[in-house]
Length: 390
Image 1 (tube, rainbow, N blue to C red):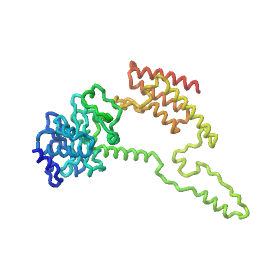
Image 2 (image 1 turned 120 degrees about the vertical axis):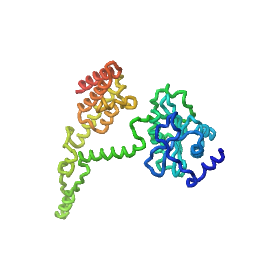
Image 3 (image 1 turned 30 degrees about the vertical axis):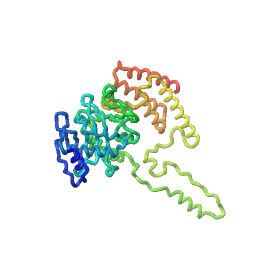
Image 4 (image 1 turned 180 degrees about the horizontal axis):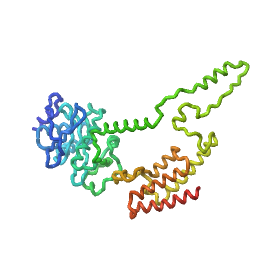
């Protein structure tokens, strides 16, 4: 039986039996093991299978086993066979013309609400076509129905880049007690984690991003005049022609100073005239001194013992409702970026951002929390810092 299945798994696509559509419901333990997933590509389909003893799924699993063994040569073949054929493991197969051309083998831990990815590969002739990303997106969408919230996997140096593009991170936020002892530790591999957001439609994520991008560009264009092309300056050409027509005995060319406000499009683009620093080299020196003084203030705030909650952006994966409460999030990292970009034109502007940062903390956190108390301590320090340097 196994030899027949192996021979059929190795047949070309046009000799294979095309996979039939199956139930699109959640593939829970009590439901069918096989679930055909929707895909925007007419050429390919995705099917979740496990070793249920049926001939069709056995052919698919053998094909996936061959792909994993071919694309992952450092992985022991016996180990690949054992996991792919294990009934506790599932595999999502990428089907093209009824033939499996890639897949991901994973094991869900339902009580712990995470899944471990064991193998992920696409056959060599079908790589660099975006199938790896679509496979992962379909898998994320599928495990949401199984109440899975996280993925864990051990990635070697060659796979880290791929998993990072799929939203995996080397920083583990999943509590250790939920996964420790459940997955096998691999030498030389890097443990990576991915949060599966419950409200994201992963197979449609490209279309969603495209819609958001078009919306933002339209809003920017409606409020901006950067897309308007103004004619170039002709004063230099006129000046040159007038100089050449003057007396040939004189080599002195008089240059005409052009006011910035007279340059077409400059005022329309948002230029508001000279700032308090003036213009020229003296203005540059004053500006550097001003930015340097703000940098000293920011450094003192960063070094303060109560600034630790504000040194990095709030992780919305830990507090999903944060953006519903705080409309304008800001932290010391963002303030430093604004200072580097020349955003602050006065000390008051940076002080307002620092006050907003601490107000956000007090708005979201209860008065009894350590975050609220640290915000109050830092507030007193910031007020004294700016009053001393006024």
